[in-house]
Length: 210
Image (cartoon, rainbow, N blue to C red; front, side, top):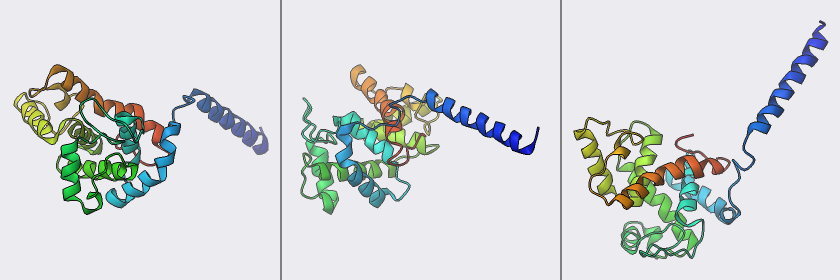
């Protein structure tokens, strides 16, 4: 076979492989919901400001989807408010700790975006893990249920011979005293964000587990 023919065959085969791969991909795998689009630029800008250029933007976006479906006016029956679903006590603490959040307006999308990204950063800095994926899982568990519960879960995991630096299939297996429903919700929270929601936002930025 001549070099020209061989090259043509190789190009054809490569093209067919690419086409086949595209057909295998889920149609909506990388499509963020329409409700998220007005907040894309602000989230990316805020995440880069607080976390740096390698910020896990897709994780934050997935978190907003899980918390409120990107609805600025969201309210929960237990009192959580806004797009980031901050409880009043946490919003008060954040507004006192960070000057740019001093207005304490959880129903304001700009405030909610900065507050979620900043609070995640604080939680991230106050936990240790084997790698970034596990560390983000701990961070998300703490966002959902409180840093104190994460610390107690880690301590209990260690006492049972589990690895306290690994969330998935290690610390996530233990319950340091939460109600069954709260425990189940907390365990589902990191999984849904990191493996169900975040992949839809990879065009916005990085994800800790991808």
